[in-house]
Amino acid sequence: MKENTLILQAHAKINLGLRILGRRPGDAYHLLETVFQELDFGDEIRIREMKRKGSPQQRFRLRCSDPELPADGSNLILKALALMLPRLPEDLGLDITLRKRIPLGSGLGGGSSDAAAMLKYLNRYAKLPQEELHARALQLGADVPFFLLGGTAYAQGIGDKLRKLEIPKDWYAVLVFPGFGISTPGAYAALRISLTDRVKKAIIPSQLEKGFSWEIFENTFDAAIIPSYPRIGEIRDRLYQKGAVYAALSGSGSTVFGICESCDIAEKASAAFDHALIARPL
Image 1: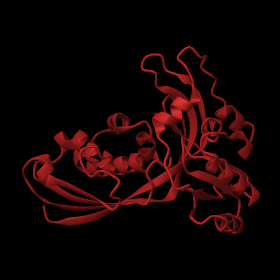
Image 2: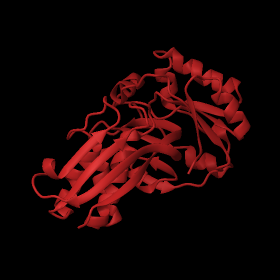
Image 3: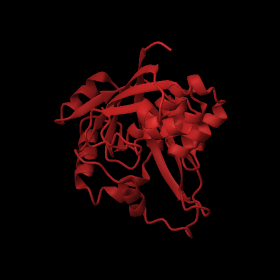
């Protein structure tokens, strides 16, 4: 094997709509329905391949541009490697450099996207069928299977039951990161949904069948999180004031996105914040 360098793109996502339906009795996971949308920006993973034998720690090395993100076995990139290790060549060595652009705790799926990009790359060697690759992705996190699929997808269950979805794509997303992350476990705890609460019915598909409208979408986390983080509510309100047709948290936060139906409106909305990014759907 000669040395070879590749660059993987790990795109961010937003949840156009996210409804928490209840709790799963067996393991207390939250059941949901959501529309995932892949965006045209994200992390970059640079991989240098070479022959290298020894322990996994000797063969695979990870560096990250964000010092807050561990580059040890707790990193999802190395967890993906560990899952695929039995199917990889014994002399495969990798120097991996993660250029982190998606903020930690932002609700944009950075870690999940990194893991999925790594799984897809490693499957060039492992050659697993898609069903098995999906199962391994789910072991790494509920959002990881979506990033194997990409594009626009409707999800149910814990986010793992996926199907492709077509919605109008002539829009821009203005992403505003408030400068702090939100703990996913803490966000779910704020919902105060117990195992005895009745599971709600999924409604997004039936509403979409009636015709597309941004009014279909909502995020259950908005009402649970904004009282504790008023800055998020201020950002959402300002996006509406600047012309967004829909604004909400992505996932459990903390990024707020505003949907703008023209580039001009998106640029004006973005200019209202010190740090905002305009992204397009893929």
